[in-house]
Image 1 (cartoon, helix red, strand yellow):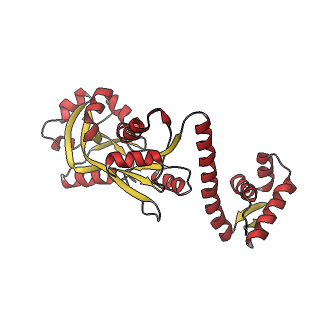
Image 2 (spheres, helix red, strand yellow):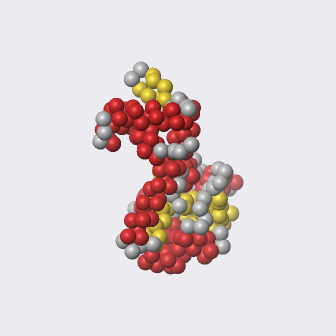
Length: 290
């Protein structure tokens, strides 16, 4: 049985747009054309992909299964087109990197430096930010070549490579640092604190640390983006924690001081991959021993 890529494209458009008319408009074809392509796909697969609920088309269980595979096929097709475009422009390697939004950008920069150093001008990075689960889904759909996260992946076929760990340092503006630095961490009790979101591993680890030392910081803000968290810290809104490994860069870039260090709370970094033969991914893993 041969699979018609065009049939899948029509099918994917209907799913994405939520109906035949909207899909036809996006594709620039007639409504009957889309309907006919869907009928042919269902006949070819021997499965019913949609059921009608009022005016809406809803995926059946079989339809959801087919769509999962279609996303992977589209991802591979897009990767092929991007690679061809890159070669035409004289760039031989395109690497699509997904970055967990809570990772400090200074850590990300350090992590990606080896592949940039090895491949030089032959490399073009395409970086996107999202949450861990969404990035892993895109990796499995071949829409990404690499994901950087502070969590390993548990999905089948996704490999987790530990790139490094670091304790945490607590930072603040010079005025706040002078106020809370003495008798660290005791002075953190009641201190204004900027924290990552409750769903993150680092937040849970920090809360465990606070509990062990009977500390109750005053939470000023819960922030999903690490850049915004540091910006608030730079403005003196509160103390914040970042990996000790980038301590010098954080102080220089944001004009803050180290209040104290928490070596028992570890920031971790993982490279999540499916295709480890990708030259940029291979360069990163070889350089870091991942």
